[in-house]
Amino acid sequence: MCVNRPAVCVTVMLLLAVAHSKRACDYSAIISTYRALILVELQNLNLTGTFDISKEKDHCPSEKVHRILRYIYNMTQIFSCLSESQRHQHADRMTKVVGQMEQLITRNCRKPERMANRRRKASCKPGKKRKGRQRRRMKMMGMLTNCWQRLLSVTAY
Image 1 (tube, one colour):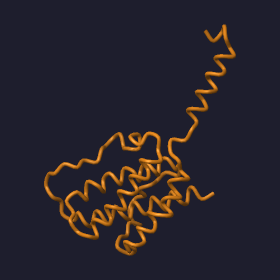
Image 2 (cartoon, one colour):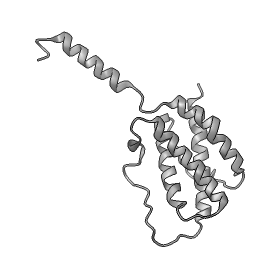
Image 3 (cartoon, helix red, strand yellow):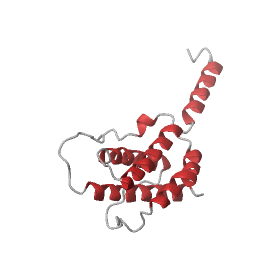
């Protein structure tokens, strides 16, 4: 068919290329909203100095914006599972901030379901209670903060 009508085939191919080349996420909206809202909320939580993950592996090893956003989205899913049974005021404020992060990514990405880790899902099974849940949540907040800082440094041209 393309042999008979090369102009039509070229036009279709160009349209497909343009449609496919659009970004999956609106990075500028995500970064500006993070700076305006979420960063302020994180500073209001006053979490500085409560966690030290510098000795551990890098939880956002990529230098690509979309992959860093994927790491952040997956961590928000895990954090939500850890926060299901928390009743503390401080815990509710952390859960609110992490929920805002998740909503920000979901709203500004075309296919947020692709952000989820395909290999392993965050399991929220109500099984045995694990000790140190609050400590793990604080550690997760530190990892999230580091990933956002990495995202800001990667996008700062």
